[in-house]
Length: 396
Figure 1 (cartoon, rainbow, N blue to C red):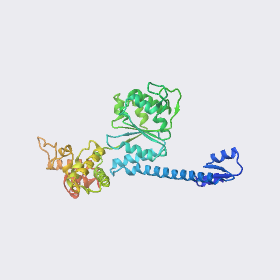
Figure 2: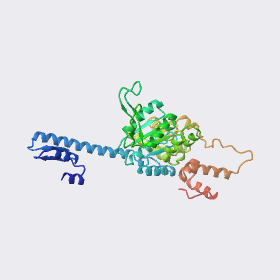
Figure 3: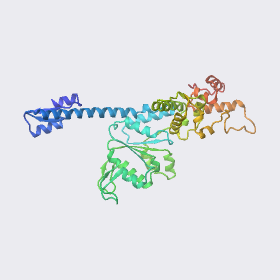
Figure 4: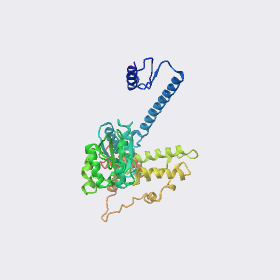
């Protein structure tokens, strides 16, 4: 009966009560999933304690289930803000990878593009989501410390090793390890990591026993690791081993309309933390500046700009009054195009207009409305100019 109950409802907590106690029966019941085993005659106090413990176990299991569900939602791909084509492509690739059994994934993108969000989303969407997710920044620790953090060490392996320590590979068994900024890892450790990935086993520092590895490795870098490999800065064989699947995360300046979507998202987050003053959005001038700005720090820089404005702004909209100085210095309030110089032989005005229109469309990912804002003209005017030049491709 216990086997039938656990098959139909695995979450059921069962307590066995019997007048015929023998060791094989007890062992069989516990192995079959019984929470406890009580012998007759029943002692009410013993039964009361057993039921209380069972109730606590049930509540804890429910809390764990809810916590896991909330964690998956918090780090799901749906929480990555953006509608641009390039971002959607990156999310599509990452989603497929998450559902696969691939053990090595490489995320490449500039600093601040959200590589850590992608790594967590891949873990949350995978069959490993209930197992640990552990991260280490390879640029923040020297090689000796990274090695012991990854592999662990045996007692006496070095001067301060007073006790055995499990490394991230052991702690994350069945789960995921995120190696951030792997391009900064020193060559000797790169060789050890390559061997681990090839053999799927490792040894603690100072150890003699091989430990099987069951971990998905997600590596990330803000550098082009293939070029670094070709120049000798990074092991090319490790690059090919890590990049079984490579996900390229686009910089913010190439995500067009996502800039304004993200700005709105961070404004809402800032409003949620403050009850005395709420922002409604960006002023039209700030929208133009945001769409035209290069965003060297990517999403992280945008978040900081909105956070600054939410603290300092007195009105309902983010204005230029509290934007960073370098952002304002890159914007010409007169609407002039910085850096554009008339050639000595001249240039047809229509050609210059078309070139600027094409650049605006490219910067906004083909979005007519946002491109028109950059050029300070209407959507219909921009579409007319593109059609007239034969450059209109049915943009949105």
